Image 1 (tube, helix red, strand yellow):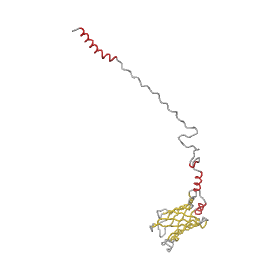
Image 2: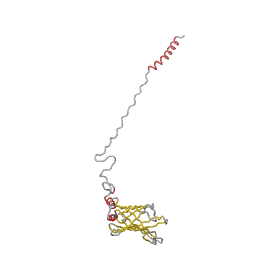
Image 3: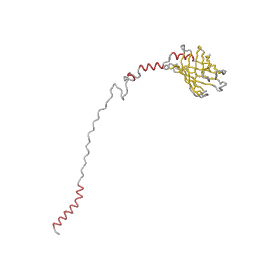
Image 4: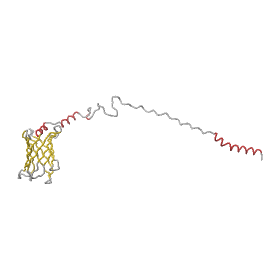
Length: 243
């Protein structure tokens, strides 16, 4: 073999064996950690002024309705108080407060005889003297064989300048609503109602007249239309104070 060829072959074999060793000796390049960016500076937190409440709440000096401090406009408050305050017309109702024996009589038409009944009544003022409420309990009558029970309210609406009333009893399921006025003495209160008559199946009306005859007696009259539409007294209740 040619000496030069043999030398070259030995050098190639040596390089093949040396390459793995060189590869092991070569260390991998170390990765440098990423540089941290400096944190952005946050704006300083605003603190509420010492003299103002936090959370957007209104302080005592904020102005309410009508541009007035503390809420309601004084003119609005005055109007509301005037509407809500009992007055002389409410005082008229005091005359009917107490416990009463009630003698009643009724008729369905002007030419029919009266039918009598007996009942008792307890009446009082409620809601600071603004309303009068009466609770009536009665005995059965020949035409109505079950005991009677009714509750009525009456007050004076300062804004309407009228007496207002409601009545309900166990002889029906409706609430009768009335409005009326009194005479100058406050001894006679007259109100009227419109309602549906369950017997005729038609709308009708009634008038109620309270007559205060003294400290221990008052009378309630009921007035309605006859078949011709002419009004007549169909009920009269005489209240006598219990002793």
